Length: 222
Image (cartoon, rainbow, N blue to C red):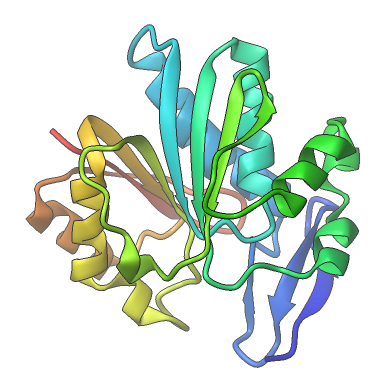
């Protein structure tokens, strides 16, 4: 499938799939969306719920590595240890992640971002004393963890183009993977997704969305 780089509304870059009219991040602002949805409404929210010394994070859709890089920045700023797992069936190419320029835009070391992409798969890699990354090259239906994570970033391609990634059975796997009190967060606010999350036992909030979107979802496992 054809892939091309596009500059988004906040000046940061993302990958577009023109055949699907779909992007890895919001065309209204890749960094702005990631900061708002996954850091502010996800990681920052979970961190504020208790005095955590460490948290385990699962990202469904590692993609460009932007969410992982922002999470690393949060860990350093707040002196919290993060054990970060990124699931990705189709890793992006070297020339693509190099072209993203996220470290430059965020004022973060290029070496950290490079290590995230060039590091091994299926084994933990210490990017920083406060940040350990494990990349898993697998499809989302292969998630089989139980009560392993404090926080899940659900950052799959949208249900318009890949509805199978948002089926109830996939969402059920994420419910099982979260610890009690764990938080699930996504840019998506589709009614079917919200109702499926509720039927699984999540306590679901529909929040104001990032630039260009009216709403997003956050769900908590009791």
